[in-house]
Image (cartoon, rainbow, N blue to C red):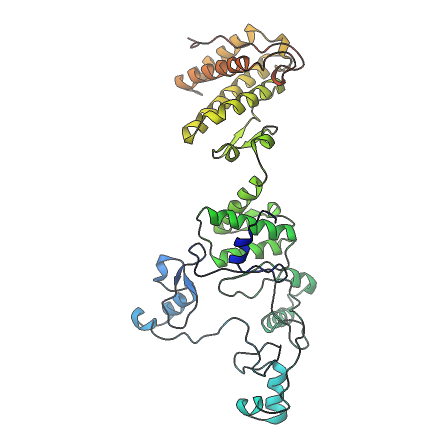
Length: 412
């Protein structure tokens, strides 16, 4: 969490106690075009929607109105959000239809039978304290009388009970998403680590200039809550949609790179090439002999800073592939699988060249691949000798012996 910049948190109106992101409409990485329908405050993300949000697009398809006429009709459907009770200083949420909380609405209708204006001026219309937050972990709304839930979640819970689908109410409270509101993303109910990972990954992706849609970010928090993960690494991507998987993988890429450096990667068998200014990964898992693997790492650490662009990455990967072919030849041709460095000799190089010729004749590798494999395999130990890494005691030559370069030239 310390790697998330305060300016970024301020941009998202982040409060660590509330844990709700408010995506700024003015920021180009969080916004789309405003919906063309009058009175609609949502955004249009897709070209086929003709400048309307998803909800308005569906309503237009079901109507018989021309497009130009439809967008001029003010949207008067349900509104989502918090509506404060109209009684002065009342801390309870009101309902859109009555503009009063349930207690004051009952008092107005059943006790006094007054119109709204007269009831608000009545001396008995006193403010009421809040009843506490909704018991759904993801929800930031206030609960209502009796149920302990906000009105939408109380309705959901009641419907599930009536349908006999509410087996574990405690689990339902933990996994149920917050009520969706435009530009709002609730991270409530998630572990601190997951919250920090989402914020950090989002910060890095915004720095790359990527657009983020509020509904996809809501899906991310909902899926993390449903699977009850303690880290985004634990998410089961197979159950997610294509867009959700893409977003999670993008976040994980930055999370996994956090704290990496050439010094941390050089001891691994799979390197993240981004720490060297390149893309993708460099894998040494195809090299089974410890001395050859350590030699390949030492060579790569010296060679990678000389490379830039896609061609540089390709050269390093091709060389590692050549060394893996040499490693396979040693594994197949020697009883010790090539692990004992001091006993290796010219016969092993001859066997390697013969194997390449066999693979070429069988059509597994081309003439060019055969030539490049021989050249790369010769080049690596030659460079290691130049760096003084083939002497006894050095990583490629432990516990003793010298690493000698094979004879060069085309096998033919």
